Length: 244
Length: 241
Image (cartoon, rainbow over all chains, first blue to last red; front, side, top):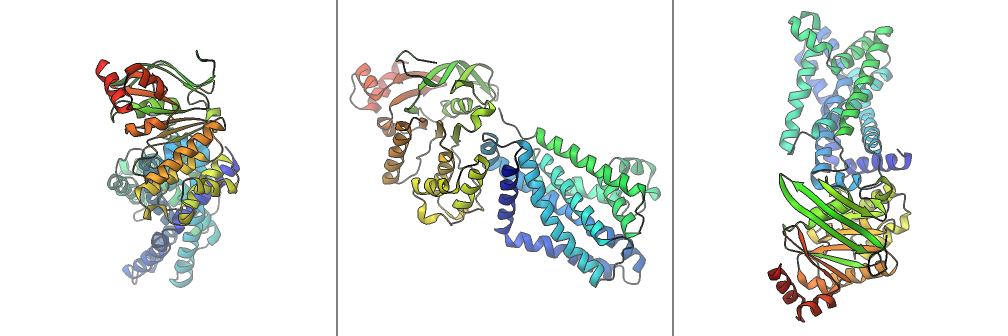
């Protein structure tokens, strides 16, 4: 792995995003818009808005980076640029970390904007530091990116890649405890949610906004980090130097 | 490694078998390519040219046989810097400009920025350097892909149909560039399905149905078949094979 190649890759991915201002605008505008809708959906139920809205700020980057990476990697695979890179002196880790750095940066901006709107304008409250929320948001973005990269190997078309979003992301959001506490779910769903990475990402965010920064938070973060490493390792196996 | 003519080989293939999708595309190919030459790989589409090229670059899973490139097994990590490969479909980023694409590939190779401008000039894209690749024509896109392969002074350039759809003047200029690179010691393997490019090659390899039916210089093939026109010479060879 080389810092030069990783940096060049991150810069290239960011340049591609910059060439697509509409996508960039959507990345930044959609989360605050959804938070605003959520606030008025829960009119008169401030407590529910608080409970869902705060953690959601840190979950948006997971969803968007999963989608963006699935499509971006699918394009690398179908246009032959991945094959070109794999025949060049580029380590797989250069590509993975390059993508990760680029999307972590975008996620930082995205989560900061969402946090400013949510906690500043819409009246969300957090007992813990908002920087911690943004930090978890960045971790979630990298997790989404790593999963998207891995799963892009199983899509032949962009239509298929887009369908992975409801297939992979929505169940995790439903089961994470965001809408219904996990202990109130059917037992088998609770057991399933125990092995889903987003459960721990959500738990970390819920603890931060509730001001609980104890050992369980550290455990949540460790699990999310472990899942990132696992997803990146799985993703790396889909980057082939030789193909049939 | 030396061949019978005494010049060292850039590529040596022994009894290469490649299966794709259950079909034996290359049923035992042996071939050597001299260093410092422009070798044309000619044959109809579907004859196995691309599979042979992919095996030389080392991106193809092969069933059996040996492929040695610049004295290393094909696909060896140290060859990734010494061998450049241009696929038939232009493998560049459509949403970046010509220069941004090349800067990225130069960054991966660790090549200085002035090589980027030189590569852009060589493929005749000087005026379009800041144009987003997607907005260009098919020929322009494949020239960006070709320019990327020129970066870092590779010792072996493997080009899969690099001149398809190009303006004749530009095509002539590119062939001159290929020969200039070969004079500088590089080896070029250029595939084509149009026979009129055969004349421009130092050596020719004719492929049909996954088999090599003839090799030699254009003059040798003329002498062997008694035909002045290379297309006629190929017909004689193909019908005899």
